[in-house]
Length: 152
Image (cartoon, rainbow, N blue to C red; front, side, top):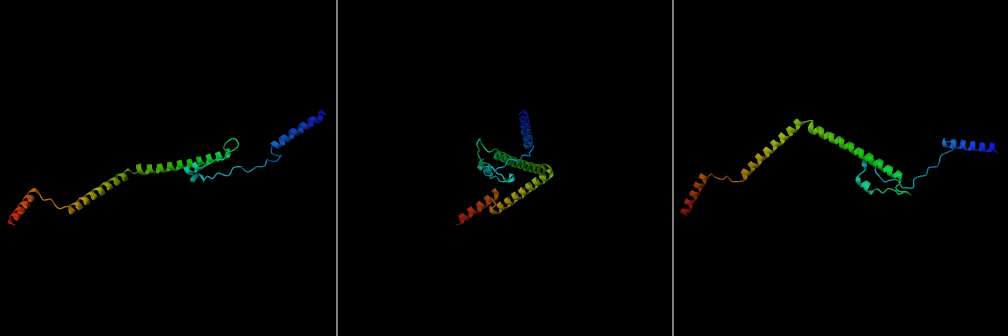
């Protein structure tokens, strides 16, 4: 009887080893109970998508798979955004600091344009307003006027 028990024990151990090595078949995979997340691709994700997101709730809390997928998409979106911001900041720095001569030329052109505009404005204002005579000319004109009034 002892021999039968030892053989049965060895058979059980052999079966356990075979199953653990994958020779006993696999368990069936069932589809998840929660619907797929309605998130756009990582590059097109907006804050409104995260605000409207409703993660599926499981027996013990939120579905781990849904939370992991959401966090992965958000991290990819933030990484892409940070990369784009860094590239744009680098371009701005190159344009603003690499060509100081171009900035000086731009400033000079703006100053020249402002002076030209001021000159044009003063010319047009002079054309619209009558000339104010000098004090001597005004006295002479007033005197002629007084003489004309006496003659009437």
